[in-house]
Length: 253
Length: 198
Image 1 (tube, each protein chain N blue to C red):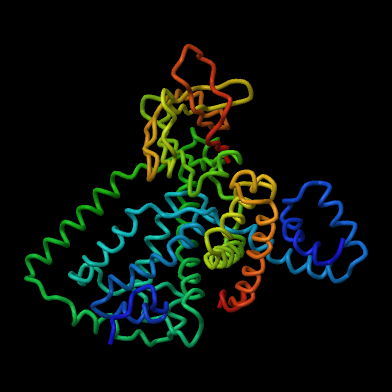
Image 2: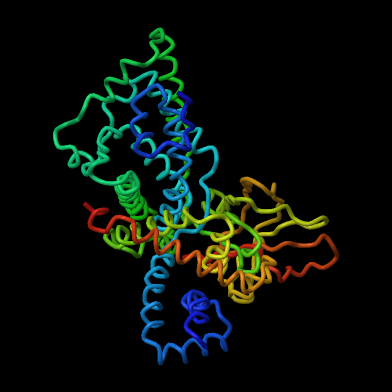
């Protein structure tokens, strides 16, 4: 095989995407071709960086609105913010020259009656306080990723399961799924906690498809000992056995 | 003069506009360009979606609040934003480690699962690689990005990608090689780890 033909396949070889016989042919060529070996090393450098790539996922859409709203509120009521926060490394970058850009912009702001500004502060403040108080930190967060079969057809499709112990002893499972397609007609999804041959159903649900689906389910305390989470698509029929095809899978780290 | 559309403006020009009445448009454009990278890096190094969301919020609020510390003569906006992201991620990492240590004794098993295995320096090292990879992938068009994502995140071989997408195998291989060529050029242009970690 000539170098030009090898080069076409060399990238696929580096990422392990060739069939065994193709890979064997590349190896034979590399053994006697220093030029292709040099090229291989360059491609491996790119591969090393790509292996560190984060999963393709968009942040939830509400996040941007929340950030812009907060900035808007702070612009209108700078006293709510006080001085802009600075990380130590940012201070180092500018030395003592904390410029007056922020303060100059403050002078550009729309001047509202102080009562209205105060109302914004109170509303935003209460929102933050009550929002914070409502946060109930999970004791475990499990990434749910598509099986390779499912991943091939979908983008940005994945989920997270957060586990929270309840006073009743049950374990609450909060599912957040992104772009998780609707089940087929006469079907539904089911979440399972699995350990070897044993499994506990956490319940069934459906999905909205495009966008974010949030579901709350509960399992008995025994489920804490089960280290694998599976979401299967189940048919509505007389067969009570779990479906074999798994849409999402997560391992308790 | 025709008004400039936000997507035609450089990152540096947008940063300058954070100090003007065009603040929201400018911050929104920067968010559209970089939030995916910040979020992805957050997922990668913090491992939790809620933490990654918190990171995105912290980073873009800091971009606005600290915009005056950005000096384009000292490096690209991307590298500056990486440093902001790294700083915020480390804060969240420490906060999370603190939370883990406070899990009640009855939940030993789950507490152990949440205990981060990587130390702070490993988190920093990994974050720069993740950042570079994510930014490089942004230069690819959809067909090239698709073959790379299916290979790396779907774990598919070239033949399986061909079967899945209906694109001929030869084209899949050519696209993969071409994508790597673009990524190689993009990665060669980027700042060094020393510049990023200044």
